[in-house]
Image (cartoon, rainbow, N blue to C red; front, side):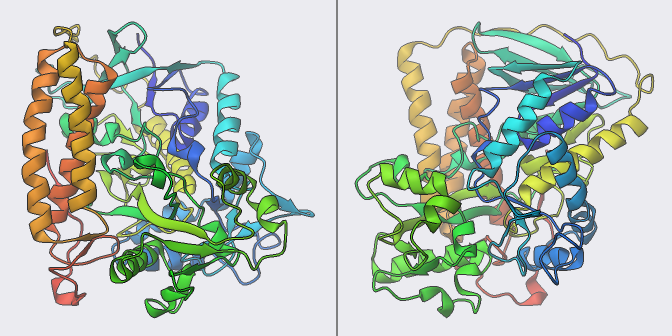
Length: 536
C-alpha cells in the first residue's frame, strides 16, 4: 500500500495535518485504536490563543502569551519555537472553527478561561470537554475529505528507513511496517513523507490522566529509526486528579479535574482547610503546574494525608454544573457533590515536554520524518508546559509541517526507495508467556511511579535504570521470539520510553521545572544545563 503522506496518530496534530495534506495528494492515517481515543479527545480545559484585539481579554497581547510560556518553561524554552507557535493562535482558532469546532461564547464574544501560569484569560473552551469537541469535529471533517483514508485498529511497528535497507548514499524514511490488529497480519505502508503524531507516554506511570493508548509509540519508533530524542526527563504531573479512597488501583487517580476550575476561583486546601499553596508561590493555586504539583506532593508527605482538596463550594449554586458539566456529573457518579464538599485530589502523570527533536515545522534529523504535537520536542514547553498550549501546538505544527513538505519534499524530488522485504512472523506466544507480558507492563509502571516521580534522587534513578535494563532484555525476547501483537508492541515501546526518561533524568544534574531532584535542589546559574539529547 502506498500513499503520498502517511500519518500515524489521530489527535489534533494528526487529523489537522491529514485534512490539509489531502489537498496535495493521497493520505493514509493509521491509529491503533478507535480514532477518538487520544490525549486530544481527553483534554478538558481548552486551547490557548490571543484573539483579535476586539475579542481578546483587555490588556492581553501575543507578547504576554509568549512571556508566560517562557516563564513557565523555567528558562529552557526555545524562543524562536515559542514565537513561531504562539504567534499563530488566531489562525488556529479560525481553522478549527471552519472545521466545525464550537467554542463557548458570551454574547458575540468567546468565553475565555484562565489557567495556571497565564497572566490573562485566553483559553477557549467547550464546557469541560474541549478536546472531545475538537477531535469530533476534525474526525467528521476528515471522513468527508477526498483522498484521505483512515485505518483504525492498525498499529505501527517500526519505521522503514533506507539505511536499514542497505543504502549507503541516502538515509531517509520510506514508510512503516503496520500491524492490522483484527487479522494479525503485518502490512508495508510506503510513503516518502511520514508524520508521527502519536502523543505522549503517560502510561509508563502507574497513575496517569492519559488514555491507555499513550504508550510512547512514536518516541520509541523514532529512536529505533535513528532520530534524536531530548529532554524526556520533563514529565509534567497534573496537580489535580480525583482521589477516590473507595477505589483501588490506577482507577483511583485517573480522572482529571481540569485546571480551569482553579482559573474560575477554586482553591487548593490541606486537610486542615488551609490554603497551603501560598506558602510555595505568591500565585497560590494559579502558579504553574510544576510548582503546584510539587507543593501538593510536599504537603501530602509533610502531613501524612492521602490527598489535598480542591474547594469550589464558595461558587454560586449551579455554577459548576453549568460551566463544568462533565466533571460535575462524573464526580456525582463517584458519590461526590463538588458544590457541597471540596474535591479530594492528588497529582498524576500528564504530559511529556520532551520528545523527538524537531523544528516548529516538525522536521527531524531523518529526511522525510516529521514529528508533530506531544511526541515532538521543539523547545516550546522548555522544562514545564504552560497549560492549554498543547492543542495549539498540534494544529500549528501540522500546518507548518505540510508547508515544508510541499516546498522541500515535493513530487519527483526523492529517488525511488530500495525494495522493502516482507515482515517475518515469529511463533505465537503461549498463554504462560502472555502472563509475563502483563506482569512486565505493571512492573514498568510501578518502577517509574516509585523512583522517577515528582521528586527524584540519583539513588532512585539508578534503581529504576537497573530494573528497566533487565525488563528491556525480557521484552526483546518476547519481541523476537513470538508473533507480534499489540500487547508485545506496546510493552516494547513502554520500556523504551521509560528508559529514555530515566537516561535523560540521570544526565540532568540540576532541578529545573518539572525535573526536581533532592540531590541538586538549587538553581545556581553556574550549573544550568541546556537541552539533554539522547542520540541513537
